[in-house]
Length: 164
Image 1: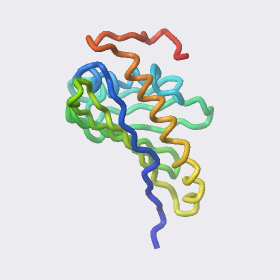
Image 2: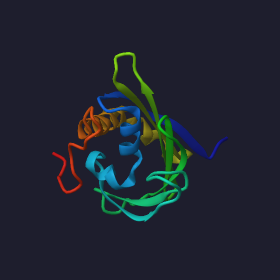
Image 3: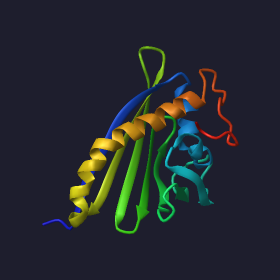
Image 4: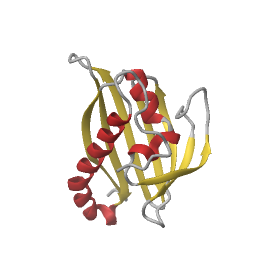
C-alpha cells in the first residue's frame, strides 16, 4: 500500500498570439506570475539560478490569497522555449506544474499546462473535488497569461496593474 497518492488534477492547452520564445519567457518568470496566476498575491524569497528568470534551480515562496498557504517552489526543468516544470511543496503536499510550448499549424503558439498533486493517501478523497475545479482555474490563468502578451511580444499588462 502506498502512503501517498499522485493524481493529475488538470491538463489544458491554451493558444497564445506571442511566439513560443515570448510565451515561454513570460510564463516561467517568477516576477510576472502574479499578473496571471489568480491564486497568487506575490512571490517572496526569490533565489534565482542560471542565466534567465525561471531557470532550473530557481526557487521562491508563493504568497497566495489563502493567508496560511505559502508553498516553496523550485524549477526542476527548464528547456527553453519548449519545456518547463516546477514543484511546489507545502507541508505534506507536493504540487507540480509542467508546461509544454509548441508552434501550432494555425500560426499560434500552443501551451499545454499539466498540474499534478501528490498527497498523503488519507487526503486523497478531497482531491476528487480539485480534479473538477482545477482545470477551469488553470485554463483561466493560462488565458490571462495569453492576454498579457501580444503577438509582437509586447506586454499588455504591467506588474503594477491589478488583474481584473
